[in-house]
Image 1 (cartoon, one colour):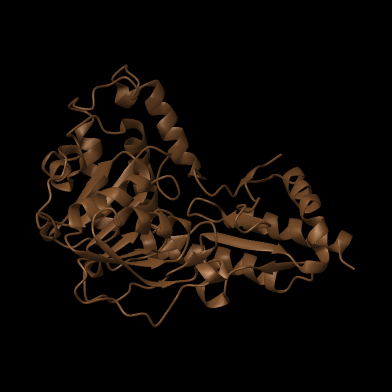
Image 2 (cartoon, helix red, strand yellow):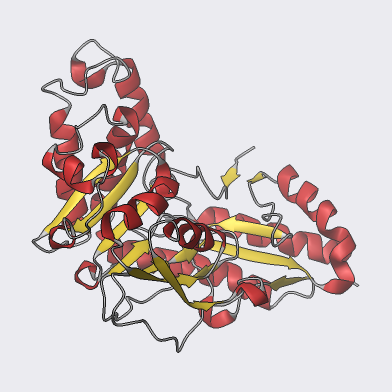
Length: 357
């Protein structure tokens, strides 16, 4: 039975990327060694990092004056590194979900933090609007896509201060005007690579402005100066990331990805909105293309477990919703084919036909 991978992360990767990674695990570039056992300083690995950086810059059209680095620790470590490197007196944060809240909490250890707006009271079902960003803040931090609650900021915001974005779960899903951001970061395990590598895109002139001592390992400048080679980098995930970047380029780049992601999201949201049984949880204007959250309508709540079992029997993987929302979540990242979304839609329709009153 064909499996349809809707896992929120780690998540679906292009089949050819997995195959190329598998080959490198067995024999990296014909060297007779696995990529798992080569030195990260070997002459044949440095070009992997260099090409990955070059493709980041090409696909995202990153302007001059920015650096791209690969780190460990996931986006969660960035919650600490961002304020460590950038917060001198005050920072502003937009609270749109669990990860945004964690980033905000961490920053409080480094200076004054202003929560400019929050949708917590509504269980994060919408993206706040009409807020004011303090002009004297060192930076303004946002989380562009909220995997748990299924909301997404789909436009590049204007900010009077450097804009910092956690794009863990929607990077490379659409074109982004990087020039509007001071920094973009994310764990790569959604749209780019297996777990283990974190990407950071940072404007160079933001650095070196805080008065505190920054431990060497936590200083962005360290990793820029050393080309992501200050310590042993996550070799295998970087290699896989490179294969995904090549796949993105070969498949039309980010404009084509956005077109496909819109088509997938529309297909599933239309099925939800026209259903007697299912209902979406996020405000329509703020719906995520990446993580589509839905529950049973009140009169059918008792059937949620039955539908989950039915969906699993039809090959659906990873659609159980996060405990904070309940119900179901379909993560539709770049590598998920529209055929899988159609299979889920058909599964929902079949269950509804059998069980709707």
